[in-house]
Image (cartoon, rainbow, N blue to C red):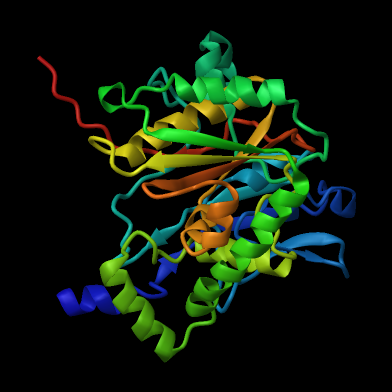
Length: 333
C-alpha cells in the first residue's frame, strides 16, 4: 500500500473539468481575456480560428484547476464548465468528494446567488466576488492606497498579538521586472524537473515528494510553463507589488499569521476597487537569491512568505463563481 502511494506521487492520474466555449456568442480576438487570465496556460489561442481552446501543458493532457477565472472575465458569458479536478489515487489523492456550487450563505441551495446578494453585508459581498486578477492596467497605484491596504494587514489577528510580519512595497516597475526575471531563472529548474514526464523525473519527483509533499503537487508547475513562454511574466504587468515578510522565530504559527494578514490586504484592496493576485513563486525564489534579499534588506530570521501583485483590473474580474463544496460536521445540543 505504501509503495503504491509513492509510486503515484508523480504525475498522478486525474480527472479534469470539461471546458466549453460557445462560438456563436464568443467575440474572439476582440477579447482574449480567458486566454490572458488562465493561470495554468491550458487555455490556448488559435490564430487560425481566432477562438480559444483547451490543450495540454508540458506533457499533461490538461491543466485546469477549477479556478473559474475564465468564466468570471468573459464579457459575453460564452464559457461554461462541468466536472472538476480530482486525483484518483496515490499520494495526492483528492481528500474529499464534493460538488461545485455558488455562494449559498443562507443554506438554501435552490436560490441563485444573484437573488440573495443584496441581503449580504459588504464584507460578505467582497469575499464572494473577489477573484485573482491577472490582467492589469499600467495605471500606477497611489501610495496612499497601498498604505491603506497594508494598514488593514497590520490589524489582522495574530498569536499573542505578536504581529510576525513586515511589508516591502514596490512601485518601481523596473524593480518588479527584475524580480520576475531573476525569480524565473530559479523557477525554471523546478519547472523543467516536473513537466514533460519521463522515468528519471518520475523517480526524482517521487523522492522529493517524500520530503516536500506540499511543494510537489502537480498543479503549481503549470503556471510556470505559461510564465516561461511569456517572457517571465509572473506578475501580469501589475504596477505595484507587496512582499510579505515573516519573522520565523515568533510564537505559534507565523505562517498562519502572515496568511491572515495577506487576506486582510487582499480583501481591502478589492473593496477599494483594486485587483490583486497572490504569488508564492517569487517567495520561493527569494530563498535562492541572496543578492535580491540583500537588495531589499531581508536578513534571517526574516523570510519572504508571499507576494501580492496590486493594480487596477483591465477587465471586470470580481464576480461570484462556483467553488467546491466543503463538508461541515455539526455538533449541536
